[in-house]
Amino acid sequence: MRDLSGLNQLLLTVLIFVPFERLFAARPQKIFRRGLLTDMAFLFINGWLVLIGVIVIMTGAALVNRSILPAAVTQAIDDLPYLVQVPIVILIADLGIYWTHRILHVVPAMWQIHSVHHAVEVLDWLAAIHQHPLDVIFMKAGALFPLYALGFSTEAIATYLLVYYWQTWLVHAHVRLGSGPLRRILVSPEFHHWHHSSEAEARDRNFAGLFSFYDVLFGSAYLPKEKKPKTFGIDHPMPSNYLALLAYPFIAWTAKHQRSDPSAIQPQMSNGGEPAQPRHSAPTG
Image 1 (cartoon, rainbow, N blue to C red):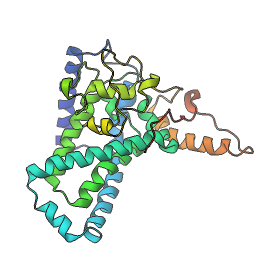
Image 2: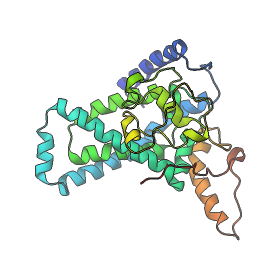
Image 3: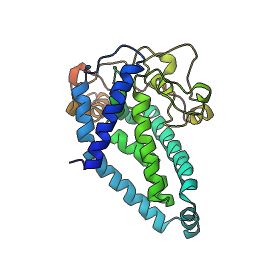
Image 4: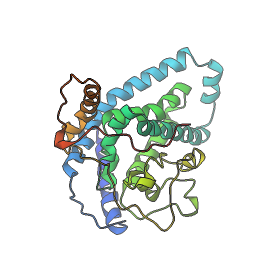
């Protein structure tokens, strides 16, 4: 069961983002929209599954910190003041988010996991948690493993997590909000909405969570002026309930394996879905 502070944080999120989306809506959209109950399941169940992965990540990082990393490095990081650690932590974590997110798009087997998140066709703040637990764990590994392995302070990492928590809700919210002159530095809802667009020119773009300059640097930024994304989702049917979405990557992997074996019997996908095909992904080099 969530602790009191977690429930309070969730309640505060609801109280902020529901009226925020009403006041600054990017497009007409209902609060009680299709898929809401599934998102509630993601919200209340995923945390327990992700927690197991986070424990493994932290354990592995602690072993690296104590057994592999030179003591001089860990001591130098430990000596850094909190206000110096925080911006370094945020930069390192978001670079990890960028590359793990990009891998989820580029590698076919990983895309089967991440396609659960991109199956969202009605984008709002709750889309932030419409993710397969393996997706969340992989991205957390990219962000948190280097931070714990390098030995940054708990306070600095907690500050990053708080910033990223609110940023994740914000960039998925259906609000008309951009970064103005900082559009090539900071990720905004406008920037991230293009990442979810089903329009061909926007596919596999805008991977960063906080700093859009990573996308600019690695050639994956897409933010046209005077144009807004109109449609979201992927190119084929997906399951609509929580348990089917949890099973989806495993069924897709099995189906792909059986297609490569002429003697295998092909399984049926839920809701008539087919294994997700990687979109025209940007190269990793």
